[in-house]
Amino acid sequence: MEPETAWIPADSRQEAMDWGLVLASQGIEAAILGPEGEQAWRLEVAAGDRARALRAIKQYRLESRGWPWQGAVLRQGYPFDWASLVWVLLLLLFFWREGRSGLAAAGMMVSARVAQGQWWRLFTAVWLHADVGHLATNATLGFVLMGLVMGRYGPGVGLLAAYLAGAAGNLCAWLLAPPSHRSLGASGMVLGCLGLLAAQAFSFSRRNAPPPRLLASGILAGVMLFVLLGLGPGTDVVAHLGGFLAGLLLGALLASLPGLAHRPAANLLGALLFATLLILPWSLARGD
Image 1 (spheres, rainbow, N blue to C red):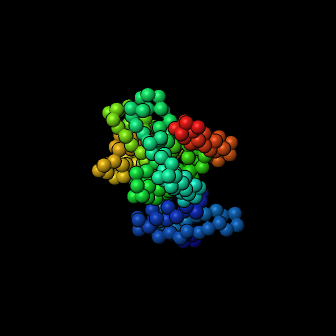
Image 2: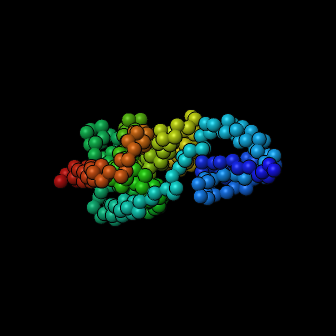
Image 3: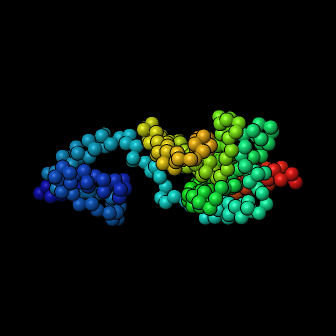
């Protein structure tokens, strides 16, 4: 007597599950069986359906070859570093000191003063805010974005990259705005964080080699968020755009250095450079 059922071996549970769905879509009943003795994962079908089932599976494998979503694009979960609270506390400290020590006059971004050689204002202006509302907006949004950046790139490397992006935003404002331009605030740094996160598309592209549309969609998502967050009325659009583009470029550079976030030496160096670029500009601004 011929057997009533036949087995189709599979390499893994996931493959067996996928093939089971394929056969179900073709009206072929199949039972998925797990490892048993020397038997690996397999599908059990009626003997008369075996040839048709094999043809359906072969066709599925041909059509699904090269699908970009077969590989893992995103890791499970997205790391968040609560050390971004330290950055928020620094903003609060400077805002508290600003009203008592005349920090605004010494550290505000003034294009004419930068042209005279006071380069440190590109950095000091990041820590100053016009009022509580201005501070609250940057602190709350920045806390989330900075935590994601520090979680992805490492606490020291991520913080330094975001800070450099904020200073780059002020540099763009100095280069493109009129000499009378004045500004202050961490929004360029916050938008720099957004650029760093949007640059993750480069990291996924490098790891999984997806089609260009996946890379473009990641960057486009960041651009749409930039339009939503960085182009409000009364904002320093040039500094915002400069910070975002600088973050995008720095993120693309860091994407070419996989594993940097897990290197203690790199994060320690990043933290030391950040501290230097915090203390030195303010020392020069105050004439210490």
